[in-house]
Image (cartoon, rainbow, N blue to C red; front, side, top):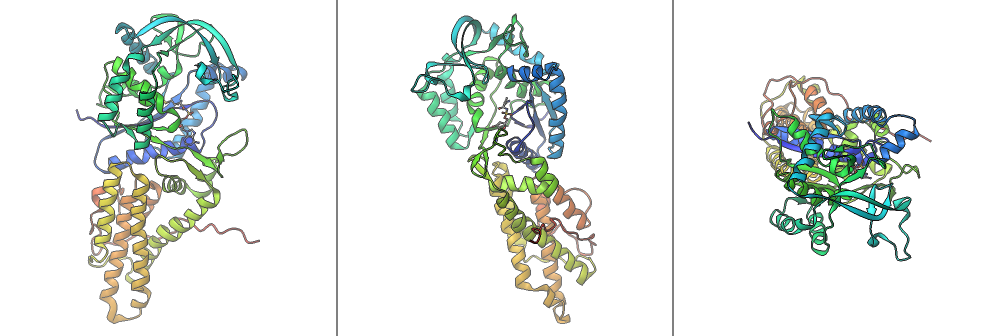
Length: 504
Ligand code: MSP
């Protein structure tokens, strides 16, 4: 059995509707998954929902529903959202699934048996909103707690604790010896700085049923449910081991946002070690989107509705913008003007125009029949293909798009330089025109192969318009010369319709 390339996303809280941030992360993971498949690897891509915890319980009760019924309803919307984004996920985990709950309980029994869990009385300040105990360090200079914690109450209760304290040294060493474990580098340095300058306190992993019952019961004490993070993180492994027919674990990449690095880069490795499981190979941390320079927030109405954007502009335009605009790491800023500018310049006038005029000219001047092979743009195409392959292996999605657009721009310039419409008027230039047309349509084909992980709908259209059967889903097919002389292409049609502003 071959180990598959296993990639996951954070599992979203089931409260509320999906927004730009959720969509962005899932698209990153989908493009990496599709890229790996295109590189010839076997892939397993997992996304899903985080359904337990106090917030879900509260919202469900407020709506007069059982938490399970509430989750079941919202899960339909979230799964429809994954379809809308055309995610190629191989499974969709919900933390309320029996297979997940059983695995969490088995894991808890294991860490208990290994002596990593103990019970003690704890008193402290508790934020129900964030489902976490606060410490003196969380107080502001004036002694109060930040309003973002919501209501903070003093609580004294017995709970189970997971030993994190003794685990710092090996984790620091592990991160230092495995530079690609946390990426980008500055996130890795932040985690190292945190681990070196703080003492890890043991983690409270239980909640008394009297206070919260929407969770997975502790297998060794039914008076408690499992703390949501100890439940949620385990989804990556519970799903992997649910597919006994496949070899998935350890994960190759966990794609997550910058706010949940500590859980993934500190707690999760320590939990895995306690369960005797190998650590994931990489935690890939993306930044956060703002809109118009301000935090995305439903309460202020500062939101981007991915579904509305997709319905108006098409899925591929949305996928393109988020990955071209923002590298994986820094924070980004969505502006509608920026979105339209990229649509117009790079998609409509760049890629769309190149494909449309190349295919239209082949139709007009050669009746759609591919001329004999020519290699004038072969070096440019090969360079873009080699760069793209190397960059996709490194999950450098923005840089790959930049490289691919180098080829788009080169080919558009080639049309201007060679002026095929002039060549067509001069019978003595027939051979030259053959050569130019071959270079253009073959470049379009190569572009379809390179862009397929990013813009699967568009690249399928390019293949159809080229009269090719099958999908452009193998990077090896980017090799120059794939179009055979004598092949007849299909019908050209605009890939990115112009969206001119209404006239005033
Ligand atoms: N349920 C936890 C994750 C558990 S993983 C074992 C959670 N859920 S979340 O719904 O709040 O966030 C899901 C993902 O979306 C996180 O990786 C988070 O960083 C990401 N984003 C949420 N808002 C975002 C932006 N505004 N921009 C980019 N990503 C954002 O945390």
